[in-house]
Amino acid sequence: MVLPPAVTIREVGPRDGFQMEPSFIPTERKVEVIDALARTGLREIEVTSFVHPKAVPQLADAEEVMARLHRVRGVRYSALVPNQRGAVRAIEAGVDGVNVVVSVTESHSLSNARMTPEAAMAQAGLIARLCEEARVEAGIGFATALGCPFEGIPPYRVLEGMVGRAVEDLGYVRVSIADTVGMANPRLVRKTMDRLLAQFSEVTFCLHLHNTRNMGLANLLAGLEVGVTWFDSSVAGLGGCPFAPGASGNVATEDVVNMLHEMGVETGVRLDAYLEVAAAVRDLVGHADSGVLTAGPSSKLLGPYRPSASPGRVPS
Ligand code: COA
Ligand code: ZN
Image 1 (cartoon, rainbow, N blue to C red):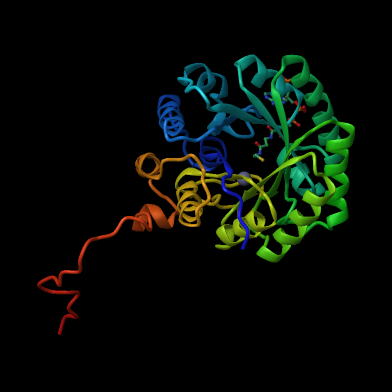
Image 2: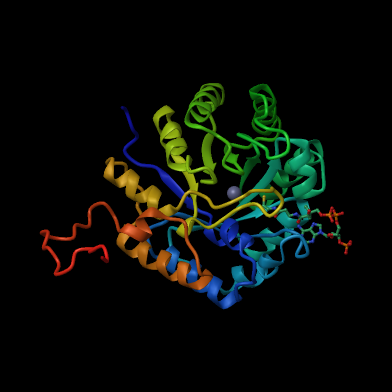
């Protein structure tokens, strides 16, 4: 197995995670989480999204979050946007990067953004120009690229066509491939990413994986093995798209970091420090979906075995 020496992790918990929480997390708490995450060695955090506040009321405080966070040097603060209006807001708020989302399938596009994929691509074109003028990094993320809850897995040629237009016509070089509701499998990820990497060698591809059916880490490994070196993941495994039935959390950042470090792949994230933040986030929202948060990192041993007085005795 040939693995890269290091990868980049984009933390998406404050956006993908907090957008899915049933109740509004106060701005002050969001800022505390983002600031704490920024001190764990992460290099990029997607901090919020500039969408319609009625569509995602949980993130209606996007401007305030951007204004109140304390920037840590070396960390890129980016935000998701669905359209030109969102990009204008994000740029005005001072983001370092704008991530425009385009659904590959029509039904998810209509449900999520109330526009066709074609209209979303047109928005992506306008956004690329806005970002260029503002000297803000622009990335594009393809939702439902590896599976759609309404239409199944889109044919590769459809995805390839959309990536081709984004890269060749619109000039995007940061492209995220999203498994929005965890429908992918390692074989599909391997095949898709292998072809995309070969076809678009100038592009840095990201994998955005949800762990809905517990294949998140297996899918991540499949991508890693064919050369993907950029992954999205979310603190405490929070996340999900409110406009996709059956959505659930992203792969947990702490699980990803633990796995990668155990295999000798660097992320720059300090796992011990990160776990403290993950525990605080779990306590804040009242749930988590993460193995390492429950069991501790693989490197943390319990010491020699000492039998306890009543080792799990079955009551008679
Ligand atoms: N931020 C704030 N307001 C916005 C906006 C944005 N990004 N985009 C549009 N609006 C406003 C318009 O200015 C307009 O306001 P007005 O009625 O006062 O003139 C109004 O919303 C309607 O505009 P329209 O372009 O028709 O938008 P829409 O109602 O069709 O909604 C989206 C389209 C994309 C803005 C909305 O569906 C959305 O925000 N979706 C969020 C998707 C999401 O976050 N999914 C999870 C992550 S993948
Ligand atoms: Zn997601």
